[in-house]
Amino acid sequence: MADLNTTYLGLQLKNPVIVSSCGLTSSVDKIKTLEKYNAGAVVLKSLFEEQIKFEAGNLASGNDYPEAMDYVHYYTRNNSVTAYLDLIKQAKEEVDIPVIASINCVSAKEWVDFAKKIEDAGADALEVNVFVLPTDKNAPGAKYEQVYIDLAKKLKEILTIPFAFKLGQHFSNLVGFVENLNALSVQGVVLFNRFYQPDIDVDNLNFKAAEVFSNPSDIRNSLRWVGIISSKVERIDIAASTGVHNGKGVVKQLLAGAEAVQVCSTLYKNGLEHVGNIVEELENWMERHNFKKLEDFRGKMSYRKIEDPLIYERSQFMKYFSSIQ
Ligand SMILES: Cc1cc2nc3c(=O)[nH]c(=O)nc-3n(C[C@H](O)[C@H](O)[C@H](O)COP(=O)(O)O)c2cc1C
Image (cartoon, rainbow, N blue to C red; front, top):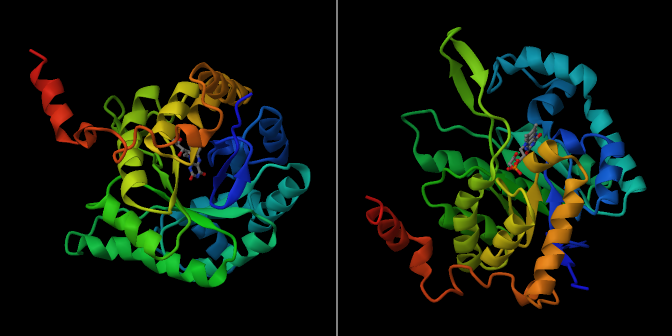
């Protein structure tokens, strides 16, 4: 039998398939079910910076997203910060797989001290899901990237557990930016988050949510960057995310150099048990190719390892498009 063990953020995982932060990881029962179906680890549903500030009495009306106030009022009643810490504690008591907590934030401000409570509650690691939308036409791009850097420095001072940044894909120099995180000894990056996208309802002239779930074809963008960053940035762990819907998707991301792979939409579409199918598909593929462990093929098709790394760049793009008449 193939050995699927891996390490991610210094944690031991029995296999590299992690259930990403979403409603499917918001209760102990669901987490237990995911463990039963062979998930390698879970990332809990995110707690929001606004919730932490609200409970601490720090959510002034001049906060970064004032329109979030009403929502936070409503949401916090049902999903208090204490409940989140209890979720971590209970999950840790009831499952053996690593439990990674998650915070969605927009700043490196007061909430950061709260990260220590997450550590004290027993979380194995923290995933920080930063959402800073660059909308200020007078601000240099570096100002937005500084939020991540400040946050990384503060978290390094506060935490002893490892943490990863879950990133969006729009950075002017993603490789350089991840290298900056690496230089600060940030243990991992998740490439990429798939943010809520607004869409316009042209019949009623109002806004609606765009498609919430990804499609398998959405894997390609993260595949490219996993292949490049795993080659160019030493040390930092990569969890590939977005568009991984089956075992084949996991294999692709491992071949590109990921340490672990996160899945979400496919479990909403196919049920929690599908995580087991994904792991089984990975194992069957390894057996067919006579790979005994993940290290036998991890990164085999990364930017550094392939004969023509330009495949990850423009030459293939030109060849492809000029052949279509
Ligand atoms: C219903 C739903 C809820 C989500 N909630 C969160 C969340 O709380 N925090 C977070 O970091 N990502 C959240 N996500 C994003 C997922 O973790 C994941 O990054 C994204 O869906 C892309 O992966 P996928 O293609 O496997 O779905 C959510 C996604 C969905 C579909």
